[in-house]
Length: 178
Length: 450
Ligand SMILES: [Zn+2]
Ligand SMILES: [Zn+2]
Image (cartoon, rainbow over all chains, first blue to last red; front, top):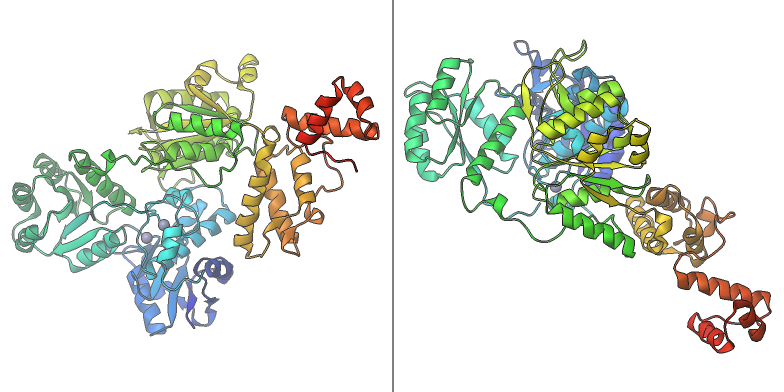
C-alpha cells in the first residue's frame, strides 16, 4: 500500500509534522505518517558559506535513508533552504518521483519583522507541503490563482493561493481515489 | 488551467553544471520547455532547436564571453528575450549588455521571486509585440463562481451589473450587509475582466491594525522598522496587472484615506522606509457595509475619496429580501458539506425548509452556510431535520416566507378563512371582495378546508 512519509529534518517541531497528516491525507487520499524515528539533522546539508541548507543534499539524504519507499517522502525543516543558483527556495521536489523537502523558515511572520502568527504559519506550511508533494505526483505549476500548485516565490504569493488542488490538478494526480 | 498556448521555452547558457541543471529543473516545474548549453559553441548550435522565448546567459564564460555571445544570438533571433546573469555585480558589463539589447540582468545567486517575475515579464513583453498573442485572445465565455447561487430577480440584476462593469476598467464599489457575498461578486468581476490572467488581491481593511495597514498595502523595505529584516511586497504591488479588492473600506483612518486617494490617482507609491517609486497597474474594487454618505456627513470619511471609489456601485441585497433563493442556497451548502464531510445527507425536510424560509438571516448567506454546516455535523439520517437547526423553536417571523404580493395574499386569505370557519360569504365580506373572486383565489392558491 502506498503511503506518504513525513520525515523531520532537525531542528523542526514534530508536532508541526503531525498536524499535517490529516489535511495531507484528505488532499491525496493516501495514508500519511510521521517517521520521527528516522529524523535526521540538517547539519548534513548545511553550507557554511551561505548559512543555509542545500535542499538537493537533503533530498539525496532522504533517498539514501528510504531507498525504494512505496509512495512519497516529504522532509520538513525549520532551516532555510537554497539551491546553488538561487538565494533561497521554500522547498524542492523531484518532479514525478519520490522525494520532496519544504522549509518553514521563510513562512514565519517573524522572519519579515511582523508579529508571530502561529495559525498563519501552519496554513503556509500546509500549502507548501501540498505543493511540493504535488510536484512528486508530476504536477506542474498551475495558472489558477486559487490552486495550491500556483507558483509562489514570495510569502505574499503563498498567502494569495488556496490550500487545495484545483479540480484539474486533483484529476491529474495518478491513482487519486475519488 | 486549460490553456491552448504554445509551451514557452527557456535556454540556459552557463559553464557551471549545477547552474544549468538546477535552473532547468526549476523552470520545468513552471511548465517551460528548457534546454541548456555549456558554452558559446553549444549555445549557437542550440539556436537551431529554437526559437527560444527567453535565454538566460552567463556573462563570464571561458572562450567567447557572454557579452560577445549576446550580440551573435541577437543576430540569429531578434525576438528572443535575453537575461544576463553574472556572479559579480559589474555595473559596466550590465550596462553594456542592456545597450546591446539584453532584456535585463540578474546577479547570482538569483532571488527566485525576482527571476520568476522577470521571466514572465519578458515573455509578456514578447507576446505583446507579437500579433498572435495570448493576451489578445480574450475568451468570451463568462465565469461565474459556483458559490453565487440564486435565481431571484435581485441577484440576476447584481450579476448583470457585474458582467457589464467587468468589461470596463472602472472602479467599483460593492455595497451590502455583511455576509451577503460581496467578495464573491468582486471575484466574479475580476474573473470576467481583461485582468483575469493576473491576480485579485483581497485586503480586509477592517482586520488589519492601523499601524500595519500601511505596510500591508504598500510593503516595506528592509530596516523600515526595527524588526523588518527583509523587504516585503505590499498588496498594491502584488496586484500589478490585476485587481485589488479593498473590503470594509469604511473602516480606514483619515490618514490612510489620504494615502489611498493618492495611490489610486497616481498608480505609484513608495514602500514604507523606501525611497524608490513603485509603479503598479491595478484596478480597484472596494466593498463596505457602512453608510458612507452618513460617514461623509459626520466627517469620518473623505468626500473626495468617496467619489473616487463610488464610480460604479453595485448593491447586494440581504438574504431576507430574496428569500426565494434560500432553498437553492441551502441545497448548495448541503451538497458542499456532504462532500467535505463525506456524509450521505441529501435532503432537507419540508418543515426544516419552512424554518429556513421564515428566519430573517441577519448574518445573511454566511449565516445560512454556518447553519447548514452545523446541521450537517449533527445530522444522523440522510436528511437535515428541524432538530438539527439551532433555532427551530422560535421562528423569527410569522407570515409568508417570501414577500411577493401573491404570497402575502395567500397567507392572509387562508388566515381569514380559518377565522371565519371557512364561511365563504362572511370571509368575502371581511376581505371586501365578492364571493366569485374569493373562490377563484381559493382555487388559484390551492387552499383546502381542513
Ligand atoms: Zn513549485
Ligand atoms: Zn491547479
